[in-house]
Image 1: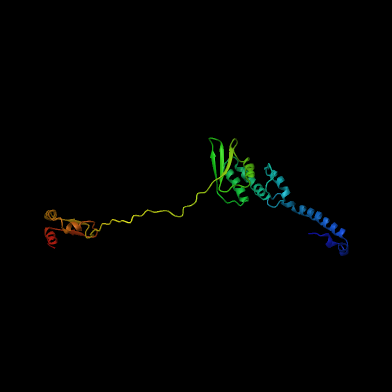
Image 2: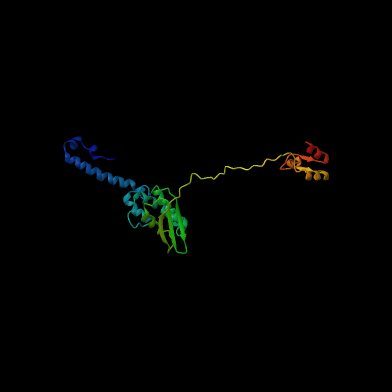
Length: 227
């Protein structure tokens, strides 16, 4: 930064209040001119251009704002607008426009787009209200299909249920089975004796077995009955 008082004799600055004022005015004008001259390279950069040139840069990319908007948000829109208009008339273009506005607002909520072709209406829902809604509508005028109406609203996200109730019965029915044989081969006499003896162990052993095979005859069955 160039300061005039550092480039003149000290006696002028120290002894004259009028000369001090003159130096301050000169520094203000001179440094403003120097800044504008050095910032020429940033005239096409929407993130570095001065605020008073944003409106002109917006018209260069084809976006003509209908009113004045927040400078930081407008910078984001101008930087993305040439890419958004490539998807004019599509859902992807609408999503890109919404994402740019939400990003500029540091709004990371989800958004949903519902397209009703029967009624020619497009509805946009966001979890948090869009602060720059007018700017969003201004941008979407370049993206929406011709003849479609636009509705912007918010939605409430349902709360997640962290617990669930289980109904448990305190009664349990169990059946115990003797697992001694998987099948029984019985003779005719064994079948007759089994029919006459309802308390036979053969009945108990024949329920739900799974490991071995037992071959019975009439003598074996008589031996079990004698036990």
